Length: 59
Figure 1 (spheres, rainbow, N blue to C red):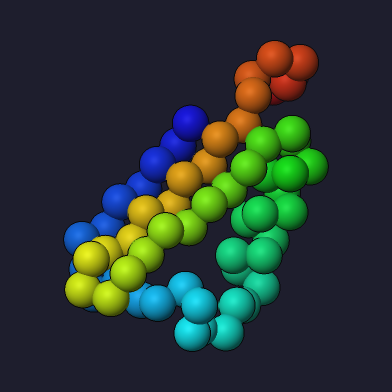
Figure 2 (cartoon, rainbow, N blue to C red):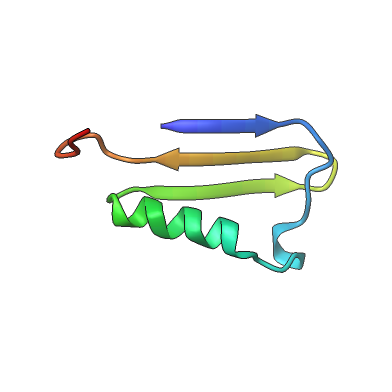
C-alpha cells in the first residue's frame, strides 16, 4: 500500500470535475489487480491511497 497525505486545503470530491490523471491512476491500479482511492474534504486535506497485491508481479 502506498498512501500520500496532504494537510492542505482539500476539496469536495462531489463538486469537482474529474480529470484524466485520477482516472488513469484508478485504471492502472485496476489493471494490476489493485485499487486507488482519493479522500478529501474542504479544509481537511487530501489522501491518495494505492493498494496493489504483490503476488504474481515480476519486476
